[in-house]
Length: 513
Image (cartoon, rainbow, N blue to C red; front, side, top):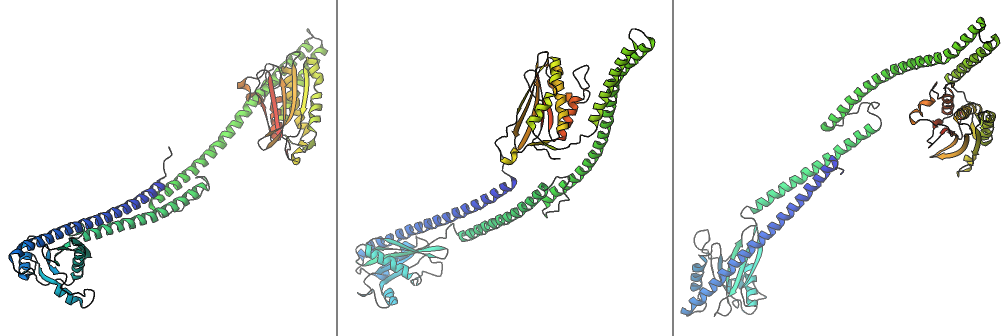
């Protein structure tokens, strides 16, 4: 499983912080609203309960009084009941006290005439408070009018500072148009220090969001510097690139310094490796020269030994006649000359003279020069030159271009090698084809025989000089074939065969010198 990059992990962390802060702000707001509703609901229940208690107590107490609207009795009832309800104030109100025109006239006059009694026995000031609170009068009147319209106890509230003011009103049984009312204040949400707590939480959340913003900006800068560092590294190898400039980020600069140190050490190592490689190449050349000298000495010593033996016989006039000995010695000298000529051809660079060639006719005529050799050996030599252009644009249908003389040397060696290894009445086939390999257009010449074949372990080694499978072979023919193919920008190799051998030369169809 592919791991997320460190930069993306930081981005996800930043997004998670933002989401958590948003959720936390939502939870706090919901908690605030829920607690405020609970506080108002509890205050409303207490206020209505106190109002109904006042109304019921007055209904029982007025039975002993002659006046149904006795203000002294009202004050006595209010003092008695509300003393047991801390922070609740209340009074009595008569709906028709303002006369028939409630919708018009002076409000203060209606208020003064409508309110019959008021008491706040738990007031924290000096004595019992008797003056009606003017600021809350509109709320009290609104609750009283609603109770008068509904004929039942009602409650109303308005926000006040950090809490809320709750007013309740209820009818007094047995006293027409007489209503009791109470007033209390709901506590601030989340307790006495709820507002301060909310403010503190808002400050904390704001600080977290600011820190997340700063983290995001720092992350953006860090990723930009990291991208520049990556671009600088990808523009070249660690050994070839110049010293990377510092990014200004302490953590990234540690990496930059480490890369610069590594690049310097790598350049030093490559310089030492280059020097060692040059020394090794020189040693290999000396070793190759030594091996070549040993092989040349071995190849020339045998015919020289035969020449010496024949000459000694001629001088002693033993078994052979002088003419026969000289003829045999001349044959051995010709063998030495052939070895030296092939060796010189191998060691000298192949010089190409490029010509436009009719490849089919050239392959046929080149193979025809070996028909007599094949007949003497008792081998059937066949030629198959199928050089039909592949399905390519007309520009690719041009004739082949290569050095016909050098290529003839290479193909001659392959054909002669196949004839020598083919069994009596065996077959040697020269196949010439024009093939496509990727974007390349090739001339492929394959020489196939049904001889013993080439072992898999010897397929590369057989193209080396002086490596041969015949006692009378020079071991230079296949090496020359590979040199010619390489000079044309192609290759020579042994193809896979279930039986027999298949030597292949591939060169580009158009080889430009």
